[in-house]
Amino acid sequence: MTAKIISVFNQKGGSGKTTISMHIAGDLGGRGYRVLVVDMERQATATRWSSAAPEQTPFPAKVTNLWSARENMHKEIHKNLEDFDFIVVDLPPHLDQSAVGARALMISDVALMPIQPTIPDFWATEEAKALVRDAMVKNPDLKVRAVMSRVREGTNLTESVREVLAEDQIVRLAESMFRERTAFAECGAAGGTALSVAPRTKAAAEATALTDEVLRLLAA
Image (cartoon, rainbow, N blue to C red; front, top):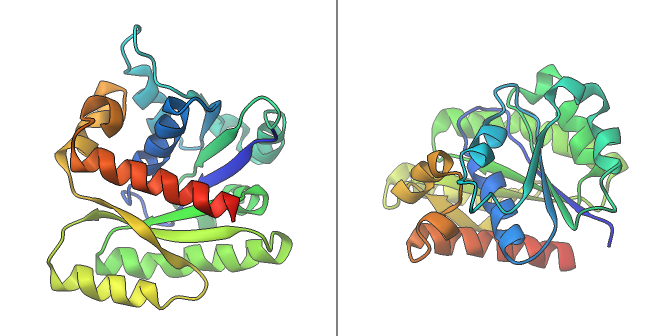
């Protein structure tokens, strides 16, 4: 099986990219798939996350940082296509300042754009969507979803952002979302995911739902 590539991207930092990347990768790894996380952040957040896992229960996906090889990132990914079932690419913010995001989207099967329900985050999606439009010229089969992240339910702003995103024809709104939950915040320090750190929580259920939705997209 040639690996399916899932990229997680946004223009704005702090949108929850690494949390979503690591939860999808960890969930897929826990289901028995061979998973590689390509950490494209200078800060190597995903790499540090996985290295925090206890030696007896390592993170269920391989994580490699390719920031130093970012100009050839797509070539490095292609070298691993036959060795993994899924490759999850955790992209850096400020995508307009490099070609990394464009290269990743052009080789991806699915791209997820986490967005917090705030006005600055909503504004930042315009540049990210421009990358999507450009990528789809060469990769028309790319499936893109906006994933509401760090959501606080019941606020007027959350509902307003959700309504606007639901009308977007370029980046459709995912059915799943990650709410603001303690379990998500604690996972990085524990080197795991909500599924391993707090398996009976709502956070774990939300993580599972997003992974299931991604798998449906890939099968469609």
